[in-house]
Length: 112
Image (cartoon, rainbow, N blue to C red; front, side, top):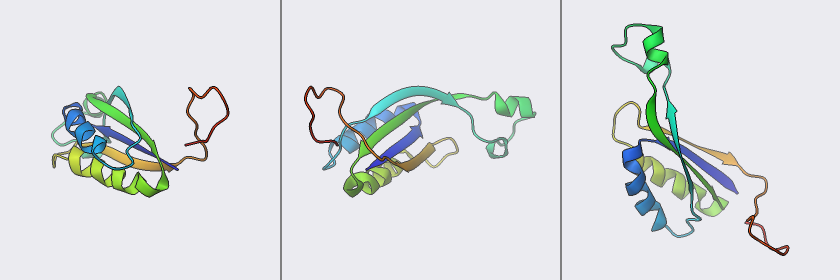
């Protein structure tokens, strides 16, 4: 099982959701509004280190826990849909998930 995490531009969220919902095996996702800044070396035209480190921009963080079989396809789809070709498009990464289960189960049942 894998967890796909992404930090993307907010204006890409609706398009990304539509693209993911249509994929076989898409398990759903969690969305969080976040702010962030990139490394100072990625900023062009900023005058001081203070300006560079306080230049936060709104982003959206997506979290998806999926089976190993669909994780790579989901990962690639996020990259394809979220990119605009400009700095600040975001970041996507995959982590291993050792174990996960739905909280709403009232009796012991299968894990994800």
